[in-house]
Image (cartoon, rainbow, N blue to C red; front, top):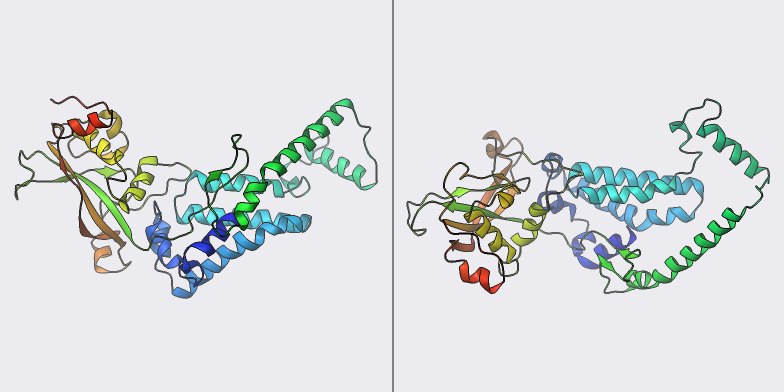
Length: 351
């Protein structure tokens, strides 16, 4: 959390002028239905959200060093923060994984209400152990206890040693995220992106049966992904803790080029062959039950949320979009043969 907060302040000026939340809900990888409404919140609320984000990520992590009560407050705030992210967006399992370490902030006494008060149960045993510890009574150490202590101390020293590059990275002005610093991969750095995308662009796959893709009369039909924006009338989805990897990757591809994401052309080739595995990653195949398309192209659009209560919303549209231009030109199976061979990709059979 601390790493994520630091890289934001060093990354995008909108985290410093408190305007990042003006864009986040509309441009995040997979918005939720709540994102649609919160996006239209007043400017002061978005500024307040950004301040809360800084407080949770930059200040609250130090609460774990300030005693039992502050550690519990740390756990409560971190969990509530992640729940808010889960409801307002779809970082899916990443939010849930971030909740897990926060559970360690709650000791047995604070979690006692979860357990039965009947005699001999866990709650009574914990209470007895805590009373003995408070009175200074210490259990006689056994061989197993000593072995565990040696293992725990050894592991602690190993973690401390492996954490040195992580701490140095946090302090560096060129801090990096999502990096492992050792082959064991038990100490690494992870966090949200330092910058916020200011506008949302999407790649829409379209196919046609027309022999000539340049014909003005060619009818282009759109494929639909599982959750990312496409059909303007489809409600944003809430999928947490599930994760649609292809939808996520398409979000990245949309603000890059297809040359930087050659797998997009590989996917187009699979769709041209009506490949069942590729189609299983999509929500809608416009050519289901028919011959596969002769051509597929990628169109580039700029998407924005419609205004609740506005004319587009009245038409049932959650989104409005404007065409930017072609993302990749029309391709056919025959035309992709050399492209596939050059990359050692298996070429789909041509009917």
